[in-house]
Amino acid sequence: MNFFLSPSFFRRARGCALAGLAAACFAAPVLAQVPAPPNASAGAVAPDMVAQRVSPSAWYVEGLSALGSGANQNFISNAAFVVTANGVVVIDALGSPALAERLMAEIRKVTPLPVTHVIVTHYHADHIYGLQAFKAKGARIVAHRAALEYLSSETARLRLDVSRKDLAPWIDDKTRLVPADEWIDGPTELTIGGVRFKLQPVGPSHTPEDLVIYMPHEKVLFAGDLVFRSRIPFVGQADSGHWIKALQTLLAFDTSVIVPGHGPLSNEARKDTELTRDYLVYLRTSMGQAAKNMTPFEEAYQAADWTAFEHLPLFRVANRMNAYNTYLLMEREAP
Ligand SMILES: [Zn+2]
Image: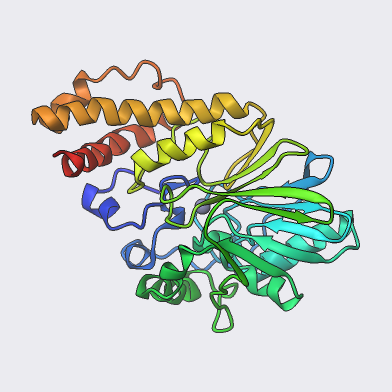
C-alpha cells in the first residue's frame, strides 16, 4: 500500500482518519480508483479470531492491520462483547456476516447467553457489514442518529456495490446495510443485565455518528476509531477541531483500559488519549500559523519542530500527509 498518494486522492476520502490503515475505511468512489486486490478468497486461510479477555466481563477480537480483502474476510477492525446476567452486549459487528458468525462462535465459548444488543461506534463498512447476522438472531441494534444520513446516501450504496466485488464472496447480494432499532440523540445510559453502559456521542470527529461506550463498573472504554495507541494517527479528512474536543470528553472518564476500533488494547488510557490529542493540537497550531501567515506548506513543514512525535510508529508514513491535510483545513477555517 502506497501512502504517498496525492492530496486530492485523500480529499476524496470519507475521513477515515483513525483506521488502522488510512485506506481501510475509504468510501466507494475512492476504492474504485485503487487497484482491486486480487480475489484471493479461493483456497485462502481465513485469519484467526480468538476472543481475548479485557476485564472480568468484557472480551474483544482484534482485526488485522490490513486492507479488507476476500482473503481476510474483511477482518480489519475490532469488535468487543460484554457478558451480562441476561445476555451479551456486542460492540461493533465486524466487516462481514461471516465474521459476525465467527464472533458469535467465540461468544458461545464464553457463555450460552444470547446476544441481546449490538452497539455501533460508527457506520464504516468494516464495523457494520456483520450487523445482519446479529439482527437475524434477534439482537437489538443501537447507534447514533447521525448515521441515518450516511445510510441513505449514494456513498453508502456505492461502497456496498464495490465491496460486493472486492470482498467477494464474503460480501454479496444478500449483504445489506442494517439501520439501528434504537437511534440515540445524546448521552444515554443503558443498564443491561445489571451492567451500566454510558453511550457518549463524540461526533463529528471520525464520522458524524461517532459514539464511544464506557463501562464504569470495570473502567473499560470502547473508543471506536477515536484513540490510537502509541502511534501516529491518520488524520485524513477528519474534523480535527472536533476530534480534539472529543478526546477531552474521553479524558473525563476514569478509564483503565481502552478497546480501540483497530489494533491492540491500551492499558495506558490517559497517556494514549493525551498523545493523540497533543499531536492533533500541534498539527493545528503549527499548520494554522503557517496558513494564517500564508507561508507555503513545504516551508512550514520544514520549519515545524516534530521532535515530540518523530520517534513514534508510523511517523514517516503518516506525518507529512497529516500536516498537509491540516494545512488545507486551517486555510479553510481561516477567517
Ligand atoms: Zn474503522
